[in-house]
Length: 256
Length: 126
Image 1 (spheres, one colour):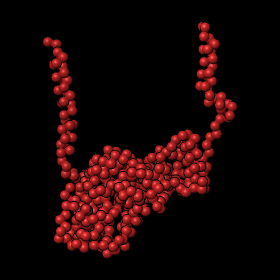
Image 2 (tube, rainbow over the protein chains, first blue to last red):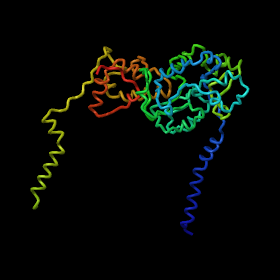
Image 3 (spheres, chains in turn red, purple):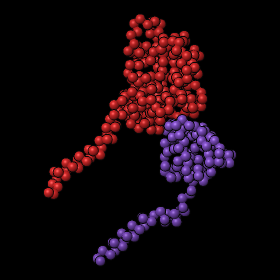
Image 4 (spheres, each protein chain N blue to C red):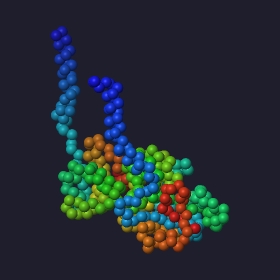
């Protein structure tokens, strides 16, 4: 009548399955819902940017916003184009909006370069894949970076569908023309990108590119405030988002 | 005990080598304690000097995490003063002499913090 070896192993296995089943099932159910769940308390601020490409094009060849950003954040200018580091940059319209049928859109818009930067997605794929949580979404929607934690695995670069992230293949220090001592540089082997100037926002200032643009082609504001300038623009004019079909919920809008 | 001579010699050499720090100190005098040079006229750092000397690395780590991860940039000191949490903006404003202040102890203790690989150190006359 004694318990034989086979019987004991069966019983132990069954017990182990029962002990872990509940937790695994709960976790599976949670992972299945890909819809962003409404958080318990709604965030107070949701920063976003509206780009007006027509205003931007009034000053052809202007790089004021790019220069201001590059100086404020010590963005290196590598000579090798394959090592280029970009925070805010100009790109072709059809490259910025590859899923947009642009054949019949005003060629004044589609034949010129358009500004691109990190979209600070509401559902950021880069944050999902980062193994060290070196990049994460702040409560105010900014997809921030902690360069202390970045291990340079570049998963985020593979995940980002906008090419908003750049890797330091070399030591960036010798490639910074005028260092801004109030902002750190990065080291070799670290990924960097636009941070919506979180250091300036925390001080109550606007991002450097927004301040630098004389044409007021960049508008920054709170999407959760119905009276903000960004909400007013989005209410009155039609806006595109880059590759919105991917479900990343980009929060940089382009007026057409 | 045919090898008494060898064993005793070996032991003597071993003891001499193991106690090298002791007789080195007796011969040359103990190594000089580093004296970090303080150039500021401020009476006190953000926390009392003893606490800063002991815990500055923990304070800096806490500042780093609070600023970067939580976006809070003002530090409330134990005595009620508030300061901006910034290595280059606050610490180095009072201690612009990194070589004589930071490096003096760090070199003595052979610790190499990697702060300055990214943060830009103040310009010093070498």
